[in-house]
Image 1 (cartoon, one colour):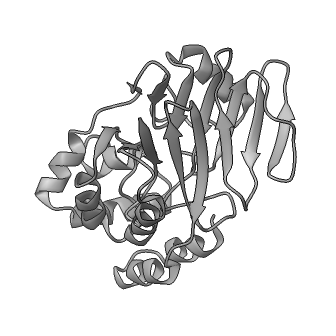
Image 2 (cartoon, helix red, strand yellow; image 1 turned 60 degrees about the vertical axis):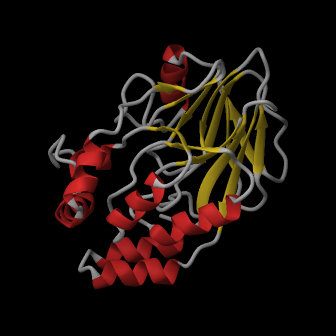
Length: 259
């Protein structure tokens, strides 16, 4: 099975549409790793678009929970709070109910793959470093765990990574090797039978690695590979919608710098 892996769309319809166009013809099903809403100005349009996709599996994110009224905004910073309060008011009753019914991760996909939003042990915890990754891999139930939440593409592998070259920045700890795909060419990770991998394919609508392009992944379960991809989108149009909606201007500005 081939999957399109998307996460952290954050109500950015332009980024979502560009991603779907770039990936057209390369996948059979879609894996959605949470945070469809928050920050951007098109929560209903994004939900409607995602609901029409051939979904293989989909889980909720922390912004989805708050927008649906399942949790309060106490854990959010000022910008996230203002955006999610606007989002909650903008959602249709149908879409709010649909968000509330999204399942919590982790979710098992097949014998090789599982998905989560934050980590396999807590959907709201971030994976920022090797220690976070080790904690996640220690409880993961499949050789490959795909996650989101940080908005930064990353690969953590208990086993050997390819040597560092022009497309990778690699570092090694005592038990874990990790890599961050460098801006430019796609990065492909081939899975082997002896390794565990924790992979973040990046954010569709809110990249935070300094690359403003939408990020997504392609998972080929037969070939046992994950490829992290980037595609440009109409950032100016997404920015204009945010400003027109009366959301904080910094939410529009950050899209242009990928932060």
